[in-house]
Image (cartoon, rainbow, N blue to C red; front, top):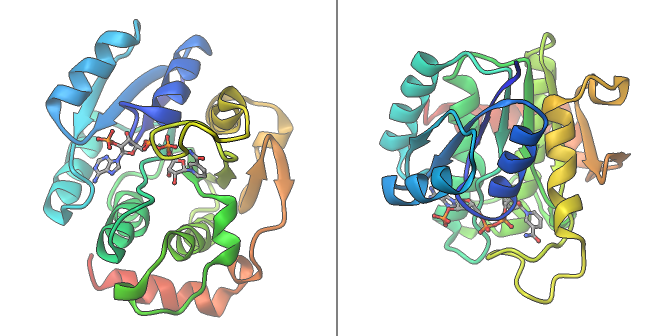
Length: 233
Ligand SMILES: NC(=O)c1ccc[n+]([C@@H]2O[C@H](COP(=O)([O-])OP(=O)(O)OC[C@H]3O[C@@H](n4cnc5c(N)ncnc54)[C@H](OP(=O)(O)O)[C@@H]3O)[C@@H](O)[C@H]2O)c1
């Protein structure tokens, strides 16, 4: 049975992806920023196997979570879904970039790694001062991490997903894209054995490969990003 961990799965796309993964027959573990949110989410999804608590903006909590995941793993798939949008540059960096980096480099590599990016990554830039980081920058950096990890872990299928603009706490009420479709690709990449999922270094939207920002495939920029992030390891 496929064992899946989804970060930020007490709400929004992560919660929906968790429900779908359970329906696909996976053993699903949730993650939330505190115990109360975790318990509430676990109670709403029959069949959830367990969960983990960590505030991803707190590096010590992220490191503790990495240890707990190593004790509770290994996982077949990890969906790095947690994210913030309207936030300070520091929090955007910590939650959207640094936490997925630390939880990838310090956790036993699963068979599949999925990073929830955004179409908005196309407006991002690298390099840039961390204290001026925007949401678009953070998602570009995350998508660059994905391609870098796809080369670092050739035995793992490593991909990124643009879920579309969907109605969640982050997406807001008027979001035009379909919410169910917003979670579908992550679940498919985590649980399906269709040949289209057994690929690496790709950026998907609604199960179709898309061309990301050109820096996503720029290996010297990837190296620069990894060097910058390794200071926190
Ligand atoms: N919605 C869209 O239109 C859209 C478009 C493109 C990309 N995305 C991406 O899709 C992913 C999921 O977003 P969503 O729309 O489902 O947003 P959401 O409803 O706001 O959910 C975000 C999840 O991340 C968690 N999270 C945020 N900061 C955290 C922290 N410091 N520690 C622990 N957990 C934290 C949230 O926990 P709390 O509930 O405790 O805040 C929540 O579970 C994000 O990476 C987002 O950037 C969304």
